[in-house]
Length: 61
Ligand SMILES: [Zn+2]
Image (spheres, rainbow, N blue to C red):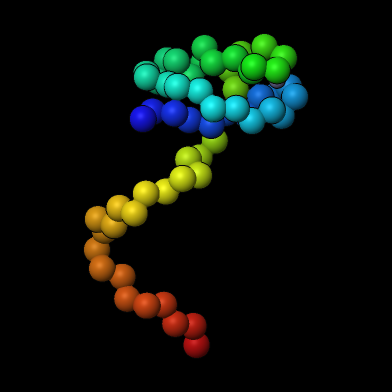
């Protein structure tokens, strides 16, 4: 589901909004103060999808 987290630039309120298209990002408004154009945050919930090349265990030394 295309739900992203946004952070209000004005009151720093973090809220989630359904974004169906990239243009929707600039139409999202803060539910607290109503400021449009929140700052998009990185998705915090990462799925268990591992499709990259196999990575060996890291070892510092
Ligand atoms: Zn706000």
